[in-house]
Image (cartoon, rainbow, N blue to C red; front, side, top):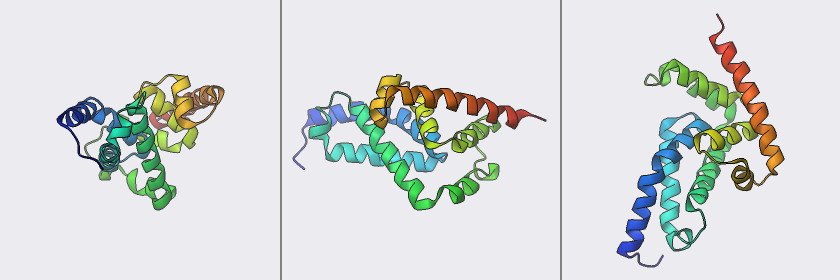
Amino acid sequence: MSRSTPADSADFHALYAAHYSELVAMLYALCGDLGDAQDMAQESFARAWQRWSAVVTYDDPVAWLRRVGYNLATSRWRRRGVARRFLERSRVENTPELSPDRVALVAALRALPSGQRNALVLHYLADLPVDDIARELSVPSGTVKSWLHRGRNAMATLLKEEVAP
């Protein structure tokens, strides 16, 4: 890696300050574990710094960071096994700092197919329009719209069941 200049460092720190929390929130919604989300966000920014001379020239460096974070989350899911992870992480006693509503929301997100979950997280937490989500996930816009529609319906059903007596 070439030497960084003070301007490079300032630009990177500004990107970090503006988008770290947003990236953690997106990754937390994807993986359901705050510690893992923070680790993946840090790794995403570390990779951005390693390639800063290229990343800074991208039209949307934040989209690149989200993609790196998404890829890291996917790799972790594959390594750990979705079923085992769901059972370990969904116990309320493992996450005492979370409200019951947040626990229910994360559990409902985990129950969705990955396409629906990713579309909902990118749309509602990262505040991306449908076309940007399609580009990031490499699928047609119609697929994203379908995932959003089905995901919202599934979430409504799952969350309704959660509050039923």
